[in-house]
Length: 263
Length: 307
Image 1 (cartoon, helix red, strand yellow):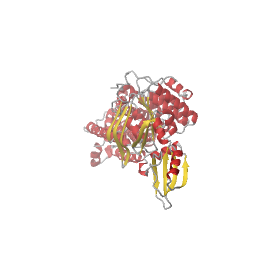
Image 2: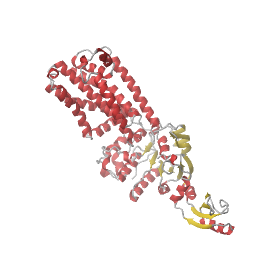
Image 3: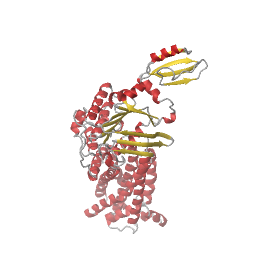
Image 4: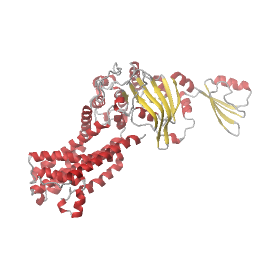
């Protein structure tokens, strides 16, 4: 028993990259050790694919339609994973007594937040693997390697506003309140964004609304990356606008939470 | 930034409210390097709130909090700060070794994990998930986590609550050793015994107000009181020998007095020779705990009970 204090020399504290890596590593470990959470992420989009796309010959048999369907389901999986993981996950974490301890360690909020986003991205990608496998084996969906790579990149970019929205919800609400709020937000957004029904089937008025949603913008950009079918002109501005708005919400919610939390 | 003269912790005129409840009311407290300060108070007194301000988890409504001269909200000010997580809050799926690595990774020069676990008798548990540890083991890990970054000051919130005697003694030894090597300690407890065993200086806090801030011996003197209960129709009080404070309840058969004194024998002798009427004399050797509670919880109202 001889260690513990040593009047400290001025050593450099770990930099932001090292800290982010540290948080990412242990968040990943924590997630992986709860296998059901990982499995849920893997299974849900795969099952949806089997039930809704593979049996429909006119979708599954048509290369472009099948690819679009995969894109829509993949995006839905990512929206849902982002909103649930962050909305609910953050709200639950905040209730753990370990959370204030982490906040008192010599690191700002950024490494933890960024690690959270990266960790979510990793598990979203895991969720896409079976989806892509099924699409490849059981439907006519086709992509080249470069299109696939572009698609994966687009998915990660498109997931950012949803991650931010989830974080905003998670820091604003308790876990009990976050769950219904996430559901109420997710399903209308997914429907209006054309993730369940292709937007070609929408009447004009609905299509106008649809093009203003982040889900539609994300879907069309993803379809563009995968099939080359061009997205509507406002897709990027709409996506970036929502991203900025949700980023402001997330940061605002985090700051408010710091001042308000008690006990 | 961190001269020898800069106080380790400097709290000046701090008030913090939660809604209508005033958790801290104009608190001022300075802790210098190498001190071992025990903070005593009943639940809800404001101890944890004060620690959360010092560790940068919250901001005061008014007043200032300084840690090594810097703002504790700034992560850099917390490089030399260690504190215990609540043992119930350890991430259950991570292994002991991993939690230590993770927390240690935030500091410039952490104690090597194996060495730290050895020191706290946790080496055998390194590969076990924290969810599978006993309460005592979690406590030890919590204190180990406070020390992993070689901090210059540690905040220990109820470090040994719920531990058996042996486990408590060994944690006390670790805290003493840290202090002997030059570390500053601020610990809270509602066990007088714990503060008595460790602290050199005692701060008594109740209902958000610092009621006493003194050397341990002086505070002990103040709380080591006897209680003399007596009824009398004549006014009794501080005119009697050695009475430091008293309470009076008006009753029809003569007012009931509770007189507090360090020397009950002298008081009774004085009472008898004074010729004042009295009856129902009763002397209680108030225990330390009891006397202390009397001292801090005199006009307790349920509003003040904020955990």
